[in-house]
Image 1 (cartoon, one colour):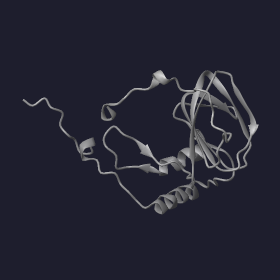
Image 2 (cartoon, helix red, strand yellow; image 1 turned 180 degrees about the horizontal axis):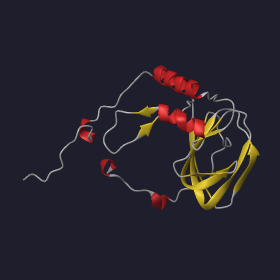
Image 3 (cartoon, one colour; image 1 turned 180 degrees about the vertical axis):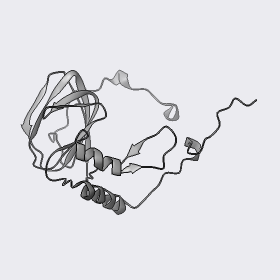
Image 4 (cartoon, one colour; image 1 turned 45 degrees about the horizontal axis):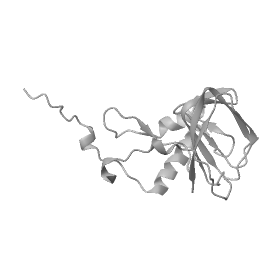
Amino acid sequence: MNNEPQNKPGAADDFEPNHIPFDEGLDRIKEALAQVGLDLDSRILTSRDADVVKACNLLAVDQMPEGFTKWQLPFSMECGQFFITSAERGASVGEHSHPDNGVRFIISGSIIYDGIELNAGDWMFIPKGKRYSFKVGPYGATMCYCYCCTCACRPLSQREVIDPDYVSVRQSLR
């Protein structure tokens, strides 16, 4: 009797990701937004908004290996720079805006935005010029940001924000 795992249809070894041209991906987003009546420039969107959930469901990717669920987010950005922020519980960011579109992903912990708690896995899309503020939840938060603007000062920092002991050398780099 063979106790080796058997590949099932859709197993990782058989996975062939679908690829469509970038512009068709943008058209797919536009079609989903139109179906749910959502205007990206109208307000800040979060992963907890009812119309956004409907759009994400329309943007599901059906051909995935067993055990995976994937969906396209209902926005795009022409450019982007990525930042990681960790924040202590109860910290807050006052009302502000950005000159370009941006997106914030909650990696761990939570933030409170406009009366709702966004937890790990949640996100918010911030259209350019839309003012917002938020408070960090009771366990702190780690967030990943992507903005078309650079939310940093020009001079390089002299601080160490990541402990060098955090580094691990993976096998392929030895």
